[in-house]
Length: 233
Image (cartoon, rainbow, N blue to C red; front, side, top):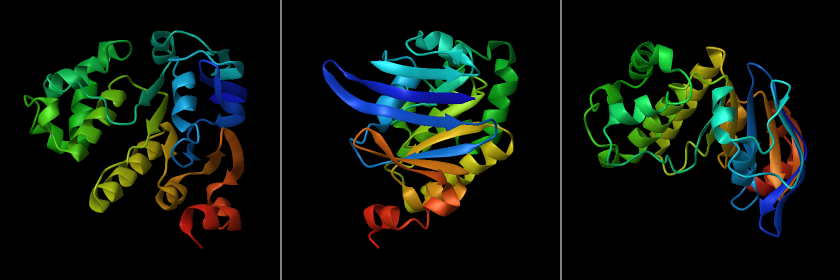
């Protein structure tokens, strides 16, 4: 579904990504792992059309989307849940969710809202509450719910476990697995190496703007370089 080849990207004169190749197939969870500053968010922002890459190609469903308007990319079904949740704090939970269908999924908004609320019962209890008054975990649920309102064909999750308690992290990864079992392709961008590799089919490790390792998630979990760099043994 998503094919990235020789992607070079950055900000101004600063090149952050130096020739990245990455692919996500239909029905896959693909993990993109890396520490802070490795270039993960830069890749997301270029895939989502927020920036125009310096070079290389980004194709979604066979169509070139490099530098395309972000609105068109969302309309095609490629939806990102950004790092830091980015909910609209002064708007009610319901309004935040309904805004998710602004560009895509409008016709089935009511059914999608029911589905999201069934998935996140805590949001159902807080529909009229301002999003800014929710806990961090609830805001993360809201951000994912808002993304699902757009009927994504490929969902990019940028650091969904960041800042959550261990219990909520377990819940979040359980939810990601559940969404994938329903047929949703997911690009999971994370620093949480152990749990990401446990649910992903394949994974890439990004270091200093380049792919340092890639392969089946189960094999990467045992890779000595990855264990040494990220797991301390």
